[in-house]
Length: 177
Length: 167
Image (tube, rainbow over the protein chains, first blue to last red):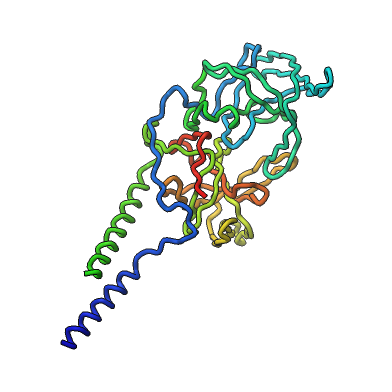
């Protein structure tokens, strides 16, 4: 009897030891079960890494980087000047299309002033609402006015335009006409 | 018997582990749009062997992905680099030693910065793969990691109306 009991104890000890070798799930990991999200992507609302955008009423489209890392969209502008009209803050500026040289002057109420963080450094910019067209959609969106003209593309499409409107596939470009 | 049940669960855990590894090896570039992951504006990313998740901004504007690295030290030949990655929330840290693939220039407002690029093991959206990362100083940024086009291209599409981050 005792031999059987001690034998059983040894067996349980061994299996207990074997059980301890199970991988430990660390408690600090917030979400261990990450199901792979796979979706059938509809052609209508997928845009690429670079797209065309029209700033109405200009006829030539501007090339823009589609940037999910940017909170607000932006456009390269010249002669950015702030002024007052009827006690309200306004901004005047010029857009010049790099490819076609088409030029247009704009006067817009100042939407707000933003702080831009580019790799840790901060800068202040003005933002205005622009009437734009992308593909078949015409809408109004906030744009920060940049004075830097050395970026690869003049326009930048940020999350304020993208959210709820399009999803981005960086393996394609220029899907919009 | 309890012991037998436990042994079976060990076996199934091992089986599951091996299954995950082989599916992760499936080439990412061969995927068409029907098989791509949908990533949100922000995602959890893992850098093995660190066990805690890092908060990452999914950034289609970034050519290469970027990670928050400290104590960056080069070997004499400058072919190897060691650096420490510390999880801001959990304080879990690990020192990596990696081969320097190349150096890249980060565009800054006033002065450009040259940074080393290394290859890291990554786990994102349930997938395991290797990807290039720039070793950057992201202390001033809300998120320690940037997932750039080198990871996204051919693998995922980005829907910024979604934030796949829990907690």
